[in-house]
Image (cartoon, rainbow, N blue to C red; front, side):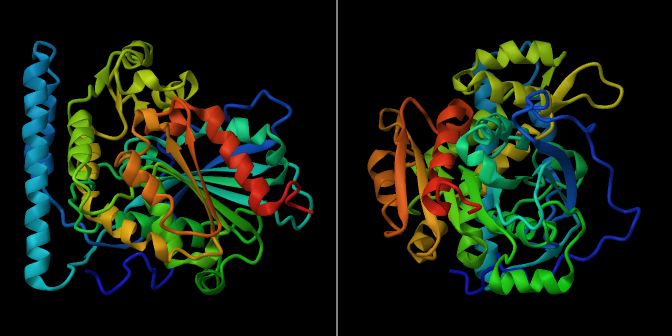
Length: 445
């Protein structure tokens, strides 16, 4: 077991000299509600430096062997059974790498640290009619593995049109460094295999909270070192934070809250990647997701070609139309010199994320009872008829009871694991309900 919390940041990420920070990888756009006069929130996209220290060694074999193997698996004349066999074999190799790295760590008796500069991309939505020094609610959203940040917008749109929307000042939607636009910014530097990757992802989530958010919701200036350090000790003096995390993102929110509980007033965890370490279904579930990711088609002639094909797939076919459209519009891109489109997050990186999740999922399960009792937790879980959660009905029912007190849980009828993507209306209602429970029916009063 670790004796040091790697999610705890010892200092502010260094100021990046002018001219080094990259340009946005995709054009500035308008939000989903841009022509709805009832929703007065603007959209801007930001780039911040990721937490500088990580436990991820560079792993050249990913580029030299695994990426080319995946490319061969995409051949049009390859039969499905052969493609599935290649996915199964390569994911098994990934599990082997994970074991070798963990054995090495145990033998060394310490965690090897690496310094590597990576970028994190965020969408920020700010109320355009803020009145003075408002102390409304700030929301932070974190995504599931492989799901770009823009897929949260259908949920946001519904939430901002609700009664609770008037109490929200700003929203940040975080994107991990290997996903979506962040992956484009970090192209060529993602050949890593993390020993403690979820903990380091969580430190990036914390950095999102501590470093980029300006003093006031209407401002865009970077915070000072003094303000950064004050936030680590006392939390926010100028805002009230509600974090919403789905799947892998739910694990990150919980881990960040464990380390810095004063930052949070409440969390909504949608079927989070938090499972008892000895749960026999955990590794098979992660393997299933990893194999599905590895075998996923990565290239289409156009977005118009991609959408109907994704709609027919077992995984994407259960999604609501709007999140799927946002996935196709913003999770794909056209490489320079290409007439087609490809996924921003390569399927190999997505598969690797699942094999990296085993240990940290169990660690967070052990730590759930330690989450600060002052922080409200709303567990939003799948329909019991669809498993009730990542680990099944009974283990998931245990999970939502681990931290007693200021908490609630609900199972969304008809929803599987991908709750925000399958049921954006229901997800928005659960967030609205949480705002009313935690902050009152008129949070700004």
